[in-house]
Image (cartoon, rainbow, N blue to C red; front, side, top):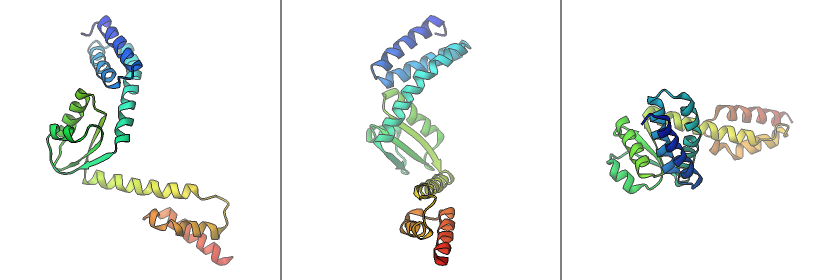
Length: 185
């Protein structure tokens, strides 16, 4: 299967599938061609395979994101997960899930052509994702503040958003500075 004409035939079909917006079939064909090119050490073809593969995966990821995120902490089989989720981002908690479970769900979703993204996170990973989301929220609130606004306006705006800011340290520091400046008049 590593013969260049076989790889080219796979990619011609993948290109047709991509044009027809059959992204799942395109991805599967690209993966077959990629494996053949890898076995043949054909890095030129590997480079050319990656763009349509990336486009097919971009579609799958976006469709999965559009379908929502599902945090799954109770152990279910791969078949049960796919019966419950036609599409979406599946966040598998470890424990009870393992890297083998993550891989099995990803491969089954790919095989069935479903736009599903899978991520395994342990308690530390969940904590880091939570902290990152809080930081981004606070950064977004700070970014909306006008840079040259009056201290009273800045302090009032930050006070109005204090519950949303959470524990964002810089937002608290900016609020304290703005309040001090507003107090001085």
